[in-house]
Image (cartoon, rainbow, N blue to C red; front, side, top):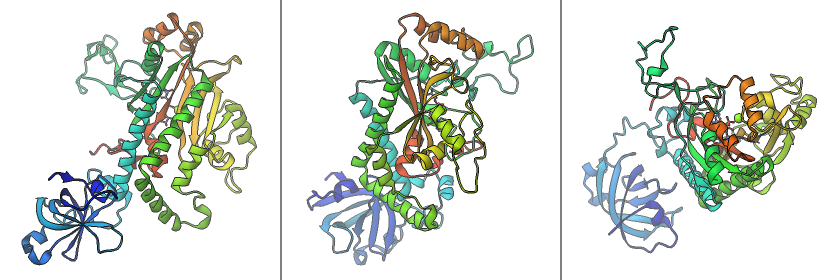
Length: 477
Ligand code: 4AD
Ligand code: MG
């Protein structure tokens, strides 16, 4: 007899038979009914214990959280709400769970409390649904790129360059932090460090991905990235996962098409394969909505929002058009923006982005052709000499989901830009080589994986869509 999973036993095509199953007790009711979960599905299977013929001491050990091994018969259920149940013939307690101290009680816990118990929170319906969706999205991403002729590339985690030029990096050093070697001028001598120079955790695999795109054609990375930006928001992590495709001979318009097609495709995948979890999360959100005043309730349910993104074109708007909208808009009857957009060239804050997607266009927006001086050094300069071929994709409820661009392929223009920004050519000699030998138009983008998971699950805090969130002052696990 093979051990089955709950998902297998609840499958409509299952035949009634003798079975064996292992899992964790969610609840034990009336000394008789175990709701058993094993993570294979959101649903529990009911296991009916013949308590009159079961040892009292054993019955006492069937507690919430305990791991059990059950042998029995799969039968048609007499009760409502389930098609089948297990008539238990024998039960073995694999691991006890003290009901006095077990943190995950069969009741509603706050997300804050569950964050403090991140090691146990996937034993709740919400977090198991979110993490199954996260896994499924991750698979859909690899599938999309594989189906479309991309190669998966592993970019280094430890790097000697700052891909974004934003200086928000975690240093990697093997030096004695309390007593580092100093050079003649009295500063830390990184020549004596492990790699013989200053190194960091990567903020993006883009520059390395560009090198592979310029030989393999179409590549993507999907790995952890690290940012030491001190932003304690519900959308920022210090360690997050980024998907970065990079494609040779593709311009900015092609980049937009790719990003839109890609996002629609992975969302369609989970709509098809994770329906049960999505419906559960949708119901959770609808219940939450009911506690809000009518005016604040969302117009669409979770599944409607996902379908809306799949079925509608993203709106493509230039930065200049967006600024005109923002300068002339009335964000709210009473409230103005915290940062007023006074003139062309200003960087957009999240309140502006949210206004554009949530109030003005009411759909995902691709903003493109940003002012050169608010974007990274590697972006392709337009003929106007002041804008670059950048694109950000903004999502309702999330804000910036994607950042990307066509890359500057002209050696002289890139060198000039680096000089103006004081970026040492010696640090990026290999990157410049791409422009010396067989340079060509190429483009790519970065999608913040956790922001995609937030959108697909309706979770509103990024800490709740990654197993162990890393945020300022927080690396407990
Ligand atoms: O816009 P960013 O900084 O772009 C890049 O890193 C480019 N090198 C990508 C490329 O062109 N290959 O970051 C890309 C995306 C953002 O749009 C956002 O979704 C996410 O990464 N992101 C974060 N997600 C969580 N926490 C953070 N601290 C994030 N910073 C960026
Ligand atoms: Mg960005």
